[in-house]
Image (cartoon, rainbow, N blue to C red; front, side, top):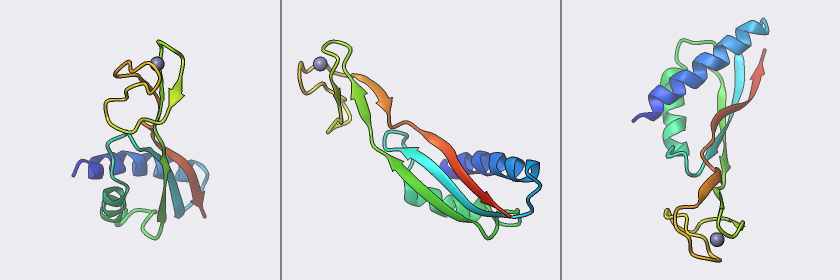
Length: 113
Ligand SMILES: [Zn+2]
């Protein structure tokens, strides 16, 4: 489960930020995770439960905001939500369009005390 490693990195960032603010606990961790990031939100929650033990985030809740995929076709400048993983343009059928949104994996918000 590669989510454990990813979550470890996010938690390290969160702990650093919390300490920088002089906080001793993390209450809430909010993340933005794109639907094309390859991360399963449910696995992320399980991973979080593992990595938060014996850290200042031990009692923290994890909220995952899912970001839908938006593609952009450079051929006809259409923006669209792809229906499959080929990212084919629905207008001109150019395959493999540019993914503009949906690959996010970031810490969006932190609540500390
Ligand atoms: Zn197109």
